[in-house]
Amino acid sequence: MPTHTPEIISETTYQEIATSGKLGPTKHGYPAVIFHANDTVTKLWAKKTGWFSSSRWRPYSMRFIKNAELLKQEGIHTPEIISHMRIVRSHVYLVQYHSLPGKSIRELLEHHPEQVDIPSLAQYIYDLHEKGIIFRAIHFGNVIQISTGKYGLIDFTDVSFLKHPVPLTRRAANIATPLRYREDVKRIKESKLSDFLEAYLEILRRKIGDFDENVFTKTIEDRIRRRF
Image 1 (cartoon, helix red, strand yellow):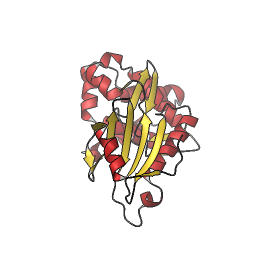
Image 2 (image 1 turned 120 degrees about the vertical axis):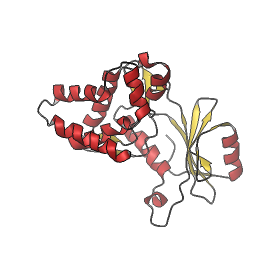
Image 3 (image 1 turned 90 degrees about the horizontal axis):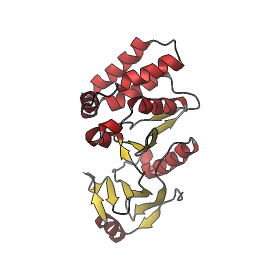
Image 4 (image 1 turned 30 degrees about the vertical axis):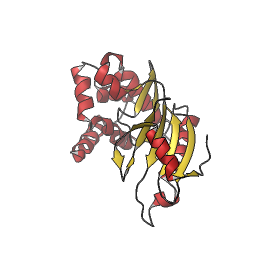
């Protein structure tokens, strides 16, 4: 694991990195990610920060590296980080890492839905919650199916680590995140796969037993409505 202190690189070095791969969507003049042919990825944070922004003192790249460490300690599969950099005289930070082997759930839903096991995916999310982990970007594009029944996470800049299992209200808010993506939900239905929410609820019924299911589902519905 590289040091949290970034290596300072020149704009020329950055351009060499950028031209060595396929650029993702651009934000603030820089790509969010660069995909390289050797199965490595460069992730960039180029947000223009104000004097009182927390990211000025604790850059998102450092949060990303720290979260990778904490997730690995919890037995969660995450990419192996290679290097941490900052472009000279800028607030543009880069982290290079090895890609996780496998495909995202979103990719599988689009091309190979028969390979998606919704109950085991719901169990994976439940296990995260039991460990006190709230992965805020938990849509199906950020969950990688490494092999049958095994998953990993990417894009984990924003994660909360609680010292106890995640409370039900916060679980509901978290579960609402992947359900906001209509295309993913549509593909699940069209492929006649199990309903994701029902799969998670079934685990709660089995593990917890006595909880207010109506409040749980209403919280999810309210969160989804706020998005649109």
